[in-house]
Image (cartoon, rainbow, N blue to C red; front, side, top):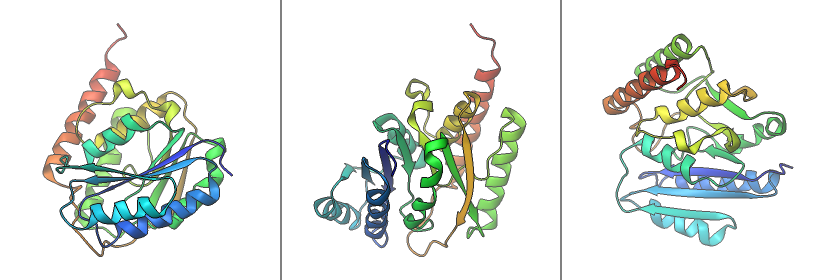
Length: 234
């Protein structure tokens, strides 16, 4: 049983086909393994039945909370920023709502939480396009060249101990926010465990994470962090 508190943050934009299952499976795993937890469903301006499904889950399940945005916030970057800045728990895990990750696999992280500060998963038999795989490869290569750190997978499911997250340093609007947190935590001595988990094809909805805007903003923020870290103290 995990003694520290855990928040599972589930962002969703027009995921009516899967969001109910994701919330229920996430809640089931955390209720068995965590003494204190919250499942936060973040409706990012959905225009389908996603908001209603989230609200119904919150009525039915204890420790489920819903936040609604009136309009879509502009992609993965703002969602991740909101998650980190508003988390008041010991651990944060961001759970995709499209069922490419089965929330039942959250159970496989639990044995490693007491002795680690970051537990990060890689996508086994990744079910994505060649373009998305290429973007990930280039992202990991740049991370290794610029910062000297390497991870299985930068943009999939991970538990992060919030004690290693400096909220004052979180800025920007790109998906690089997550990677920024990992780099800083690693430099501060965070104990990292990496595991492989199954990856499933998206059967519903549309993926938007690999847009040109997201790629451009991530590259901009990556170079910005590199310059800041290389700058002499003071």
